[in-house]
Amino acid sequence: RKDETSTPARMHIAIALLFVVSIWVFYVILNREKHLSGLDILDIAPPKNYSKYSGNRSTRAELKAAGLTDDVVERIQQEVMRVMRHHIRTGTQLGLSVCIYFRGVEVAQICGGLYRSLKSDTWLRVEPDTLFMAFSVVKGIAASTVLGLVDQGKISYDDLVSTVWPEFAQQGKESVTVADALSHRAGLPGGLPGLAAVGAAHLHL
Image 1 (tube, helix red, strand yellow):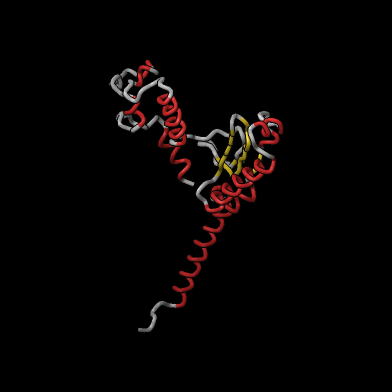
Image 2 (cartoon, rainbow, N blue to C red):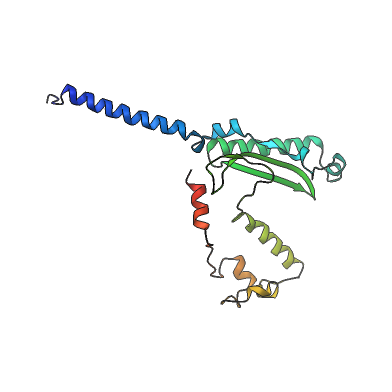
């Protein structure tokens, strides 16, 4: 069947499409800093080692006492930066901060990528004093700490949480045990005022 669309109509459609595309390109240019790709971020804020500049910088003697040579420390730092570059480039992370201690000695303090706050659309470079939300990151640390205390006989899994945290025993939480808290059986809601907005700000890029 012969196309019955007239030439003027086709021109109007073409002009409309060109207009839409132009608006989209203009929008992308204006909002480029809000829609950064991983490569953009790496160009602006590649992973950087702050260890040598930090006030908590480990001395060569401290590193040696901890059993770490300069070569080992360098390889650790380079591997951390490699992993950070990978996650930023692939878009799984926008900004990261990693600090590693071994036997009380700072081995690496590396930051890379960008972040922005709830109050601003401006992207800023991640630095050692940039605050991050921890959420489940602390679970492994908390569990390891409790395991150590149990191993030392200082607490038991059957102990009430209130035996080590008296203020916890209120609003129906009096019978919660350490085991309940560690295994997510305490029935405590995880939501806090404003938490949804914080999550939305990081998910909606």
